[in-house]
Image (cartoon, rainbow, N blue to C red; front, side):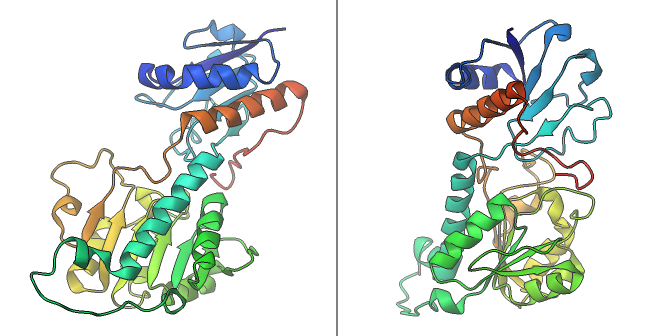
Length: 311
């Protein structure tokens, strides 16, 4: 029996994903049909990455077995009341490796003080060496797949790494903290703070005036996670006051970031265009194909979303 897979996204993404996704699905040995358009009554799986409207009516697919997201973030679909089929988010080694490289690169950039050398020193010779990694404390908020991978990479370079999550976790090489008291401790030791939490009601505006005040003065904030994690006015005020020395931001509440947004012009802010965890078509296609294979074999799907937790 043919397994019908609808690619529900944009024509641009279809052109990018159709070849590697077809190749990955063919490797499973399944008899499948993959297309941008299929009769709704025949759709078994939906590969999903909205490029415009996100209020799709999933009730039109009566035999839908699962929605397989191409994104790690599923906030655009999880609250859709018409989606009752299982929802899987994207976790793949390409995305994870990309995040590790982005986080490690920017932690090292701020740790070594590279901006001062790259932007020029105006002819002033100042041989000031940075501390060793062992003396620069890094805190990661969020110990999921991405946070854990980044924490381990930084710990391997000698940084003392603390990680905070809502529920207790144990990760070798990382000081794991949880709960409200753990959050306060995690923030208090963050010379460099990395935000890798999901977007849920419990995490929105987690970095606000109160929590920013708990950071060491002159700390650095990196946000490759979700724009909603930060109360923007509070961060800008902390940058102006010197409580935060610099913020490197990859995710924003509105994307693309509007041209008149104050982040663009602030001298203590670096903007990157949501590239830290960009999904790679080849590796993402392998994950999608494996989940389709599992679904057809009656095996548990990978990376299922817990709707109660919101991720």
